[in-house]
Image (cartoon, rainbow, N blue to C red; front, side, top):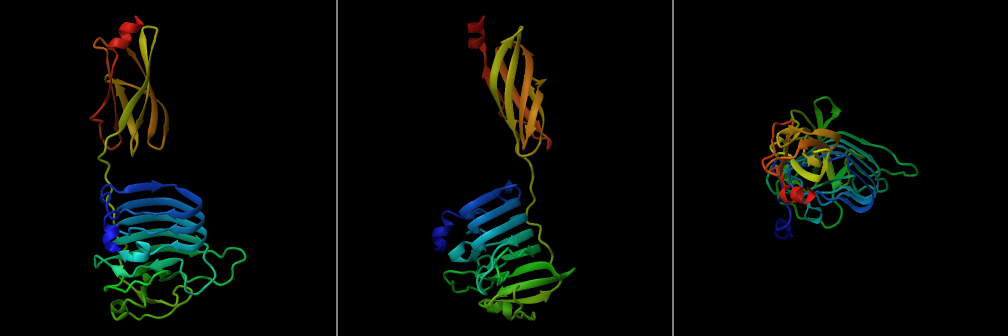
Length: 310
């Protein structure tokens, strides 16, 4: 199974150029969110009314901030690679709220992975909360081994840390009952429902640092396209659009500043007024707030159009 997975998963961006997803809302889905690549930054993720919320993730350098999962009845926060239960790296989740997941002692809100493929795989959580939905009684454990096929553990195990769970600097370290190396590492493990389930144990630990997994840089310039060119009163009225993963600060056409008409989520619409160029050529490019200037400007040749319009 792992060999088949490697052919399609665990390929993607690096930690300086993570895949960024912000303000995503998913509802009425079966497999709601399937993050199959490493190096992801996910902010303000809202999942409601699904069978699986975060499903079959490739947990390696994933950073989640402000995740709210509600009314997910099967697996709210899946183990890495689901039935393979194989985690390659470290992830962090800062702000995780559940309004879901009540009904039995074994099915968890958050699943432990069994296989630590890199030897340093771990999950770090903080600011975790659970709300009781209406008409639900028994609460699921917060952390337990995953449901479905049982994977024979290949040591070392994969711990889950909940930072400041017992107070500032007092963290919960939760491990699988199948991870014998972790259970025998000298920490004082115990059952503590509903934090733990029938196949998980917790110990209070200190000195665990919150990992910083991503170092995003903006070294990608904007992209610009000329949408229309009109001739009016001896001038050209040029309209276009530019896009960037940051903020666009300037658009120029033939070195003349264009006026930004609207701006939304890295996309700007712009307008430029120019005299008809003698060489019949327009060159439009943009620059962003990180100092990146577009190197492949959009070039429009107007010679034939100008001759036809005269």
